[in-house]
Image: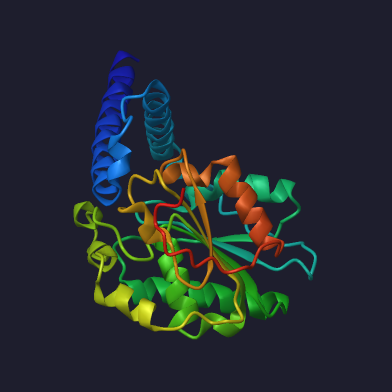
Amino acid sequence: MGYIFDILLLVLAITALVMLLSFAFSWYESANYDHQLMEGRFQPRRLWLAFKVFSVETLIVFLSFFIRPLGWIFRYEPIHFNQEDTPIILLHGLFHDRSCWLWTKYRLRREGFYNLHTVSLPPWHNVENLTERIAKKVDKLRLSTGIKKVHLIGHSMGGLLARNYIQVRGGNTKVDSCILLGTPNLGSRLAPFALSPLAKLLLPGSDFLERLAQTPMPAEIPVTSIFSRHDNLVQPFFHARLEGVHNVELSGMGHTSLLYNSRAFAEIIKSLRGLQHENDNDPNPFPS
């Protein structure tokens, strides 16, 4: 038992170190864009906020390591559901798996959404193969249920794959709405540290991101981008904003915490119920 405890402490320490470095880089990026952040940076309330965001994100990432096997075990796909219940397909991000959606699926069922599905998106595949997995999942659901369209919810890289599907791969006629959660729509400066061939796609200005930027978003699909100004992986944080869609900026949570935060979940529910489809094109990346 002592060895197990030591291993847990080691994993926690490594996780905390990685999170500390990511948040330090986040602060560096934000302060370079907004010099006002330097003022009052040592105020107690700001220090408390920083500690809270860092602690919660570290704990969530730490626990994520141990729930990953649940993503392989619990692959429940609904069999009985209302034919008017539009399928919701949940797309995880880089280095996550289906397990990251367990809490979201539980909360969605409590809100009356039962037709929930996930897709495995291994980080060693290329972007077109992963997009093809999404396309096959959508077509399988449409064929088996007779439902014409689906909702897509993508976290991080999953959001970019959703965009690739509806903007480039012809999925626009098969998608009812799309929700992006902590998605680096303009890339992230932390991408070079990601140990995956997909990392180069996340570099700001990459060919992949430029192709998405130059391809119009289908006007018939309401798209919502939900992100946090304290995201420690999407750097700078406003690279999650997407022109021409409904942008929802939150605060006080890190990248993975978006999957568990009640405010982020409330925005997901609003978007699924069509309560806010207005476009937000505020050019100011640091709104007051």
